[in-house]
Structure formats: structure tokens, C-alpha cells
Length: 493
Figure 1 (cartoon, rainbow, N blue to C red):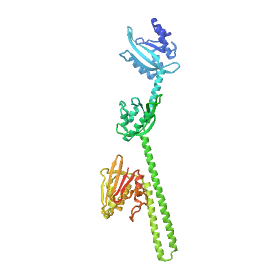
Figure 2 (figure 1 turned 135 degrees about the vertical axis):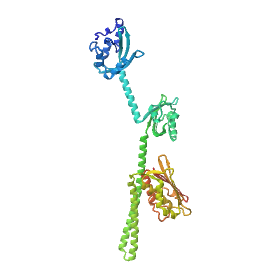
Figure 3 (figure 1 turned 120 degrees about the vertical axis):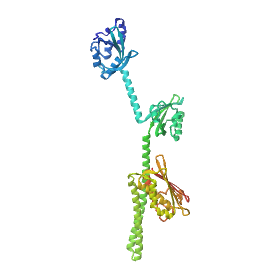
Figure 4 (figure 1 turned 180 degrees about the horizontal axis):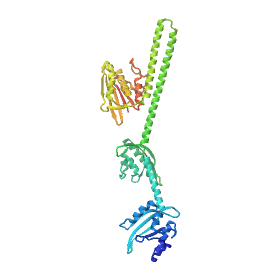
């Protein structure tokens, strides 16, 4: 049924009310289930941009031509669902004459009269408010997603009551339920002990002196995970320059921080290796120049010698220099080999098995020295390492202890392993002659450095050992006392 004049929808007694409704950007309608008759008010046409009679006034036209097809199930459900309050309100999109689909709030009510059930309803244009709501929700979504992806959260401290407010993302970083209420003291207690005083001081300085802070700290979460976080606070002041709030961000930077620390560690290791290799190059260059110069001199002397005895003596010197050259080149090969072997596959090794192989190879040296060898690998029996390196490290340290044993007592040499978190340590100790650390401590691991009068000391073993250990990311530390003994602490991984 098409209505030519909007007021025909109303009774004469309600004409004044009809004029009011038709001018408030709203429309009303009626649908008779029995007769299928439909009535639209003038305001109904107006809010869609039409004039009364310009479009067909029918139930099917409304469903098929005006109502957005995705909203059809929602609208039909609102009509067919009986509500105890006798009305249902939904938000739907209708096609307007000149502005495309817009959002409307539809309220439907079912009522009975003597001629059968009827539906009446109202439409209010809510497009502007709906779009603002959608944009706000979208902005919130993007903001929350950005915070989640970047692992950034917000916090606020109300200075008056020293109350702490945290965003949901902050609770995610703490690995806590966001319904938990944290005080400032409780929030700080999650940080590792050495960082708590620093954070307390930063907050105090922000409150008292309006100083902002930006810190990287270690946090232990509620699930016992230790992570790096960034806490940045900015004081908010009143008209009198007093801090009334501290607002800031709280960010999980664990991956970035650990990558940065690993990179810095690698850079430091490379710098150390470069310095040692440069030192090695200088030493080798000096030795080669010295030996080749001496060799050239002896060759010339050999050619100038006339007696057989002189030539024999000079030739003996030539052989000695030649052997020294060969030794220097062998040492060069050892150092170069360290850098080329670090990419070899690591395998799971048993410390006891490798140590027994080393002691077996040095059995004659051990028996000759009358040494007592002790070991304990129960605290960390295995390691993932390059086999040749572990064997070489053990052999060099054991040989070193045998070589520098004390002449007045039985040599006692011990080797043991311990594990501290992810790190594996090997400790080598002896009761030998020891080293004067104040005098030689910074030179112990240098190439061709010797500190005793042993005729077979070459000063190359500890240089090679340190290079092998550090090439795989480990460290070696020496503690020694003259006439007491020596202790090597090696962090293998």
C-alpha cells in the first residue's frame, strides 16, 4: 500500500504528533501480518531521501531493495523473536536515494488487535554516530594491535596516592591476569634485585625533581621467565611545576636486547681474536725475518769457509735455523687451523672418555713425574663440542701441569666440570710451581711467552688453548700463586 501523504499513516487525533516525528530525522512503519499491508510515515521516506510515493511501499520492496542483504537475517530475527519487553532493537543498513547505504536503528514491536497480529517499528538515522564508533573501534584495534606486536604497554602513576595503573599489554609482559591490582612496590618486586634500587631512584627523581627516565632492566615474570624490558617515564606537572603524575611506556625488548648483547659479544670476541692474530703475525714475522736473516748469513759464511771443519760447524747452524723455521711454520699452521675448524660439526662428548684418552696418551709423562691424576665429571658429564678441540685443550693443560710441577712434592692434578645455567665450566688445578701473577699475569696466554727455565718450554700451548676456547665463544681464566699451584677456569659454552 503506497501512502501519498505521510499524515495518512496517523489518525486525525495524532496529526500534531506525526508532524513532530516526521521532523526529527525518524520514521515509523506498520506491517499487518494477515493482510500483508504496509504503511510508512512521511518521515520514513524523508530519512531515506525520498518523497512519499516515489518508491514502492511494500514488505518485499523493503527486504529486497532497501535493506542491505547481510543485515536481512538480523532484521528478520528481530521481527520473529518474541521479547519479554515486547520490542527488539537492531542496527541495520538501508539504501538511501543519494548517499548509498547508511546506518539506522530499527526498533520493532509486535502487538495484537481484533484483526490479528501487527508489527510496528521506528527508524532513526544513526549513520554519523555509527561511523564515529566504527572509526574509534578501528583506531583502538590498530592501537592495541600495534602495542601487542611491538610489545609496548602504557602505565601511569598518580603521585598523590602513589597508585599505579597498567594497560592490558603490561599485564601480558608481566604474564599476569589483567584483573590483578598491583601496587608500585609489587610491580618493582618483579624486577631482578640489582635493578630494583635503580628503578626506585628513577621514580623518586621523577616525583621530586621532575626528571624523566629511560631504562633497560631485567624482569622476572610471574611464570619465572627472565626478560629484558624498557621502562620510560615522563613526569606530568601542574601549574606550579610539581609532578602530579608519571606516564610512560613499558616494553618487552628481550629479543632485541639479547641480539644486541650477542652481537656485541661477537664483536668483542672478533676484536680479541684480531688483536691476538695481529700479535701472532708480528711475532711470526719477526721470527721469520730473524731466522731467514741468520740463514742467509750462514749460507754466505758456508760459501766463504775453506776448511772442512768450519763448513761442518756452519752447516750445523744452518740445520738448527732450518728446524726453527719449520717449527715456526708449524705453529702458524696450528693457529690458522683453529680459524678454519670452528665451522666443523660439534658432537656430544663424554668428558671422562676424552680425559682418559688424553691421560692414556700421556701415560709415560705421568709415570715419569709420579703424578696423581684426579677427575670428577659427575656434575656435568657431557658437552656438545668439537672433539679435536676438547682433546687439545685437556692435553695442553695436563702437559702444562706436568711440565711445571713442583720439585719438592708429588704432583697432584685435578680436572672437574660444573654447570651454571646454560654454561658449562671445566676447572683444571695443580699444585705446581705456580706463576707470579703480578709480574706475568697479562702475558700468560701470549705467544712464545715463558716464565720458567724449563728447557722444553715453547710458550705456544696456552696461546693455542686460549684461541681454541675463545673461537667457540668461551673464556679461560687463570689463578695462580708461586709455590702453591695454578687453577684454570674454562667456560666452554
